[in-house]
Length: 173
Image (tube, rainbow, N blue to C red; front, side, top):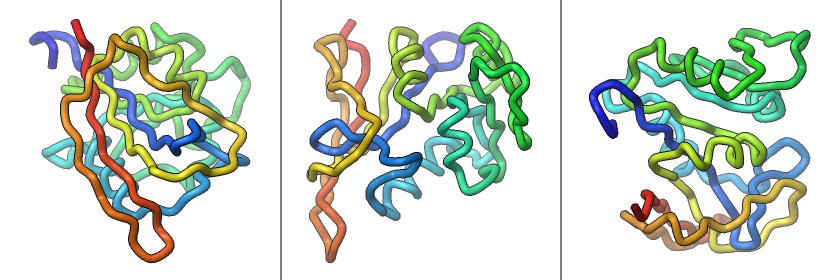
């Protein structure tokens, strides 16, 4: 946490070498290690689950509610059937709802528009950088100079799976 009262906002995503983060509402790759990392980051070290903020399309792309975590969905559709998620219509509402958990971090898990909204507020970004281009319809622009690489864990290609890196970025200031 950056201070005793406010949780860190952490963006979590996987990005192909050409910037793709999604294709037709799904991930264009299958990386079990990335899914395990996502679970670890959203559950937290005590395994009690953190409140995740996401957009409607990201929520609809999930296989269902992810066990042990709150699903806070930021959408413009006020009458949308949330299917177990907590629906908010503003960034301020999303943060206020997430902060009621007293979590040390608030994971923001997609999609591209939601990342753009939360990026100015983020303390850290956790990216799985996939070292291959993929076709897709949802893109994430590269990080700017305000972000510095704090940690990197490289993984070689294996069978049909591409090489990838788990990278942690923090603010340069």
